[in-house]
Length: 300
Ligand code: CP
Ligand code: NVA
Image (tube, rainbow, N blue to C red; front, top):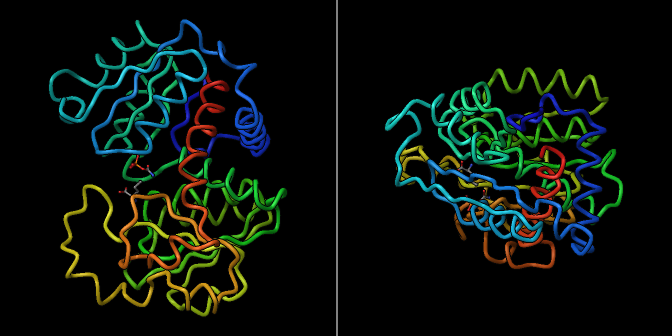
């Protein structure tokens, strides 16, 4: 049995197989309409969600399975009963557990005690389902991902970490541009650099916008992630130069803009870019479903 907690333990071949399966699903769900017949998947959320909640629910339904939604009104896991008991109970009814949690350790604890696969649908450190959908979105455009360069601009966060991991494994170079003091977690960078070296890709970190010159695509995310209560006024001045706007896109020469959403228009990205021909954001949102379905079919 395998889990999807970080993507670090998934091989390049396995990730590529998921992307191929996702493309097949997207092209035609007919052969897969009963692929999860009689199967139930618990989807639980300690944090808010639109895309993750709906894409798992609708996606599982398309495969003939049943999604059981457990919302954040139940409070943080471990309060009403232990995470261990929660995992063991859910394992008796469900065939997989999809969990959006604050702490990555909660996912590790779920996985340690569940007897069914656990899928990370966002935690403070990672967002692997998002990264899978993002690579699917780029693959649709480029065919082959190898040798492409993806830039991430803004706050180094969970999305950045997962993009650094999956990029290396798929032969994609990465440029990460953040304001000083807002780089991705140091340990994650060390591990991602090692992965990049192993897979022959580059991972460049900079606070200079000139590092964006020549990249293929630019990716943005919120400047303040869920659970971070920093007031926006405190960071606006520092982050303002890192807003993705038409000038940044033109100066870099990037052909596509990506954003995991929810987006904050006129904050980390202008509406001009978000709504432009270069924007793949709604493809990314749709592809969450196909990528996650491919992940579920791999794990269950
Ligand atoms: N991108 C993403 O995970 O969106 P939600 O937070 O709405 O699920
Ligand atoms: N970095 C963001 C991603 C939202 C999908 C957050 O954690 O809030």
